[in-house]
Amino acid sequence: MENFYYTAPSEEIFIEIKKAALGMWSGCEDPYKSDKIERIESLQNVSDNAMYMVAMLDMPNQGKLASKLSEEARSAIRERMIAGGSSEEHSMF
Image (cartoon, rainbow, N blue to C red; front, side, top):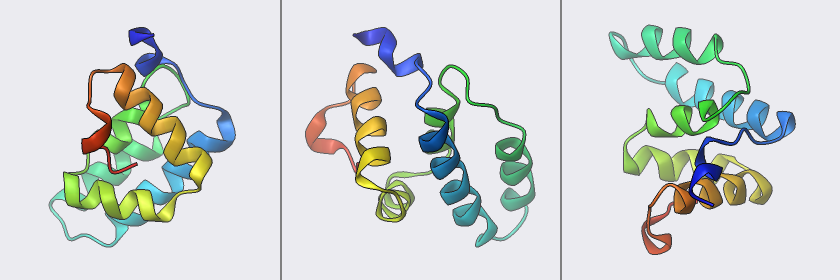
């Protein structure tokens, strides 16, 4: 199960996470905003790229991201975080 962290979610969930992450970064100021948006825009739904977008955010902003996602997307992230070694009680998702 530990390799599940590196398993890409469905395309629908990936797009949902990507749109929400882009929305989060577009509200920030440079110098971070442009670089993060550029990185996210180029990502494809392979391996752990969905989790990479989540990991770009600090814990408070992960909570904000979680509030923008469907239960299905939050569950996909939570399952991967747990598979990667995070404790369930510390998950924002």
